Length: 361
Figure 1 (cartoon, rainbow, N blue to C red):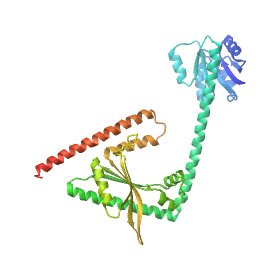
Figure 2 (tube, helix red, strand yellow):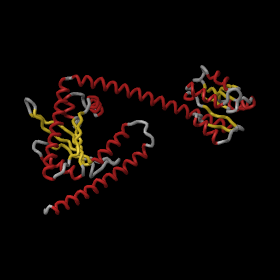
Figure 3 (cartoon, rainbow, N blue to C red):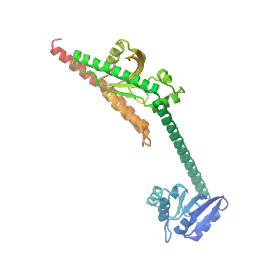
Figure 4 (tube, one colour):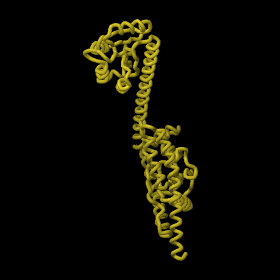
């Protein structure tokens, strides 16, 4: 039988609860807070619940709760208050301190039994759920350790470092071409369509994890064949039409091969994400050979990029409050950003048209 500890300075209440519960539980009693703490000491695991009165001499119910909290026992045994108090302030204070239920005197047998049973079951379920989460966290950390170890081994291979050098060369090739395009367009139209260019090379840990997740072998050839985003660039533009113009001009350049194109600007993701993605095969020129390397290029406006960085934080941060509401607000912001981008583009076009008329064109 599960053990219940009843803590009340009135003997009649202790015996009344004993008589109600002794058919289903092993009932132990304490007449004050000090005795209750003494009886819990060493027998916490055996105790299914504590029924605690608030008004007691020597050490009242609130003092007992504080003592339980200091010892960390509130997480190990559920506490139910048994009291004649009916004030919302008192009940609120108890719940804020971690009490799971509040039972008012006088007692009614069926209500007492059901509320104790429900509290014990919910407390047990909560503990099992927390234990499962902790076990999963340990498993995930072990998996991360394995990934880190395997990634370290991978990064020590000469062939892997050679491949990373080639991807870095491809990034430099693409970045240089965009800078040249930007400079030429600046001469032609008296403005710079490229606001900034950001580049990144995927880490060994990220490469290893993605190969394993997709079921590919962890080899240098597998990286080359199966991953298209090891080398990545993000081209930030002022206006949407700059994105399409730059993408078209870049792909038309000699020796660049377009492998895939995903337009999340015209067809946004459900969360509001907008960007133009290109997977390119780009030539690099080495000492002994010319080689093609895959590079992912993402085009965004300034506002799209700001939005994406904020959404990225939400995706990878844990314990964020009101996640659903934030997701909804981000979607609304994405829609507003789209409208603003095209409104600003229209204003720029009107300004450019006026300047052309003034110049006699």
